[in-house]
Amino acid sequence: MAFFENFTQVIRQKWLDYVQSNRAWLTLQMQQTSVRTPDGGRRPSSFLVLGVVNALEPKLSNLMVPFYKLNPDEDALVEVLGLNFDPEMVLDNPDHTQTIEAQDDQPLLPDSPDM
Image (cartoon, rainbow, N blue to C red; front, side, top):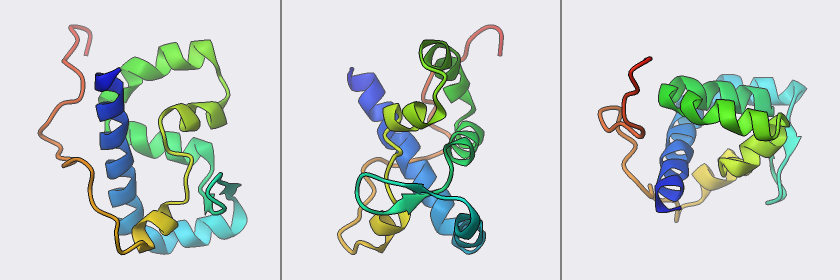
């Protein structure tokens, strides 16, 4: 379970970095489509979140296939990955610190022969 916790922390940080860099257009997009979060905020649609985190961490696709087979509900997948929160609230919190260095040169999953 430690691997998955580390994995979701890295994905969370990459998502927050992406939101920070793309706040202007995400704010406009969320005026049209957003999802309420348990923390009382809102976030982009699950399809957008899943697309972005898969692009940021392509090896996530190794987990997405079995996850999706178990439960094809995109909102549930966002929840499992620990991304069902308002990223603006986290980024605007002065106590927000990176939990793990999210560096592109650190692979999260080992290379598989078919990749």
